[in-house]
Length: 191
Image (cartoon, rainbow, N blue to C red; front, side, top):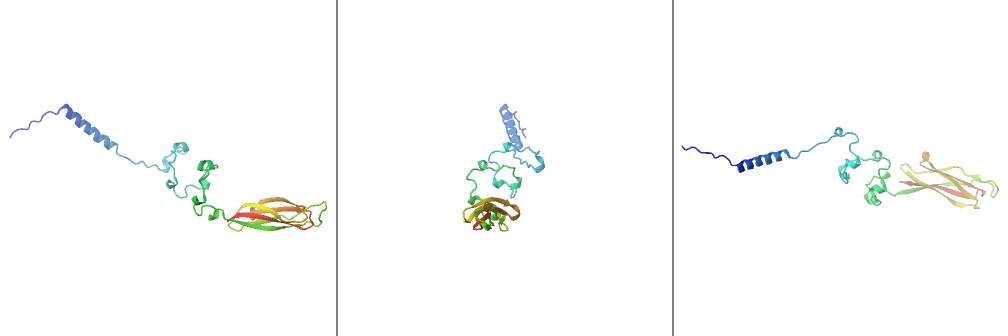
């Protein structure tokens, strides 16, 4: 039997094999890895607005209920930050606005009586402070006052104040019309 004679590899073969080994080992070391970052892994204050890429945090990346009004800082949401046309009735989820109805309002009113007894004398008389409130489940938006009868036109509206206890407003008028004037206090409420 004849012996097989092995030739010594050439320099090109050695360099080629070396390059192949380096390439295979290099690719094995470059295999993708996933890094999981948990709550305790990040130092407080390490992630700031400057550190987050623009557009990196979107609504579909946030857990449901993660952002609430109580968690937002004062002035965090401004028209300049979200754009003047960003919030429209169609863009608001049902139930996300107080009572679930954007723009649905109710009007509640109460009459105010003229308590003046003598018309056109030097003494003006104020009415009783008249409250008017929103219905249960409603929220006060605004208040108003109007004369339903100005009497002899010696009548004035004195004040309208918010009334937290009545979830509404308190109104007061004064007249010098001998009981002929009448007014009305109004609460505009969000249903």
